[in-house]
Each structure stands twice: as structure tokens, then as C-alpha cells.
Image 1 (cartoon, one colour):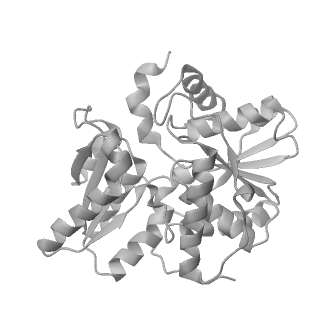
Image 2 (spheres, one colour; image 1 turned 90 degrees about the vertical axis):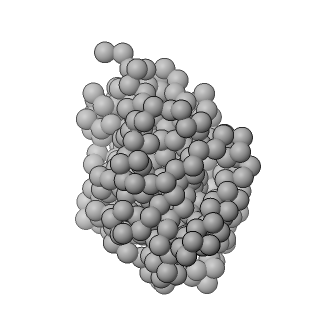
Length: 329
């Protein structure tokens, strides 16, 4: 087995796996299960915390007292980073994509409650210079006697990959406990790290399930390249490479919709339907689009070879509240 880098315990693990009985019955010859990674915590709920367990352990080992990261104004990752920083007695600095004129709501509200310093940059600047800007902030803090850890969006880097490497091993253990064998595992993709970790562990453990990602921004080619690069960086931590090609990375494209964090009526209606049908609340940025895409593909028959599918609920509850005016009751 591969020796993983050290981590720290921050999340409530393992998260449970539940069958979505009514959705499965509605779809016919397929059983849909959901892994409740939305229940990894409260302040730092969702999938990001698994990755941050590795990222922040490395930061502490390096003597960092500041965490700098980036994301959208309603970034779950940014909020989780701010919460963990406060929990551990560190400081946080968030570089957020937006104008600074947004309503103080949901994740952005929690960022402020948690004491994070916040710098807003335009979407154009964010796309081109977010890493450079975070490095500049780290250099400014260094002049004041601080040491900052710069964390990419979603904690999707080589060290963060191991959060979902461990999650896949957790799933394999739960399969034995539940007497279930999943033949496909599906997750939303927004920055690539969650998929990379699942894929890496799946290959190392010679698991027979296929890993699928539903991209919520950009396109399949972008994420094939992005995930490949993350995987190669993760190999430097273990010294253990796996043989793979970009064709092995399964991306279900076509469900970005109106764009990142932008919702179409059919997506909102789907989130509302699943909430009423199963008592599970998806979010409009990640899991709502990803589950919507999964269900649409099942209806089209493109996934008909799979009988038991596990969907990773990566969290994002707070991101639902800014979209409340889109719901009809």
C-alpha cells in the first residue's frame, strides 16, 4: 500500500452512505446511493475539509500562521478555510471573485463572522492573476513577521488529493460493511482535486468501479488536463506513480448550464424535487448540477451498464440561500 502524507483529524468521519429509494424506483433498473460528505461538519462542512486535513497539517509543519486561499464570493472552500483557521488559532485571508458589493449573506457572511480578511477582485483578474495575488499577499505578510500558506481554490493540489484518496478507501470499507459493490462513483468537479483523489485510490486499490465527474464549470478537456496535473503533483508525495491517460478520466460534460454558480430553472426545480422526494438538500453550484446531470444521463441510457451508482454529496448547503428567490412555493 502507498504511504500517505500525514494529516490531522478535522472532519466527522466516516460519513454515511444511504440509498435513495424513491429516486431509484423512479429511474428503474438502477440503484442510486449517496455518500453524505455534506455532513463532515458544520462550520467546515463538505468535501473541502477532507483535503484541508492534509493541506493544513503540512502548513502547520512548515510553521505557517496564516492561511491564504481563493474562490467565489460564496465559496464553500473559503468558508471552511476561515473556520479551520479560527479553530486552530491561525489567521485567514480570502481572495474572492466579486465586486465587494454583494449582499453579506451565507458563506460570505460566515467568512466575516469567522474573522477572515477579505480581498475582492474582478472575475477577469481572478481568472488571470489569483495565484499571483495570493503570493503577493503572502509576501506582504512575511514583511510583518508572518508565514502564510497559499492554498489553491478547492485545496485542489498534490497534497490535497489525499483527502479523497482516503475517502475512496473509506468507501471500500463501507462496501464490505453494507454488502454492496458500487460499479460507478460520481462526483461534481469544480477544481479537480476530489476527482483526482478518488481516481488515484481507485487505481492503486485495483477497484472495479468507474469514477465519473460532472463538471460545473469549464469543459471536459480543461478538467482532463487539470486532473492530470494534480495527479502528477500528488505522485511527488508518495513516490508511487500510476499509469493513466487522459482518456481514463471520465467527465460527464454538458451540465455547466448558464455558467459557474449560475442556475437554470430546471436545475432549481430538480433541487426542489430531490428535497421533497428524499429529504436531501443539494446545492445550486455543485451537487445540484452534478446530480441533475447524472439523472439526465441515466434517463438517456448512457449509463445503462451500471446497476449500483454512488453519488458523493460534497456539501454546499449555505450556497442555496442566495438562490432562494428562484424557488417557487
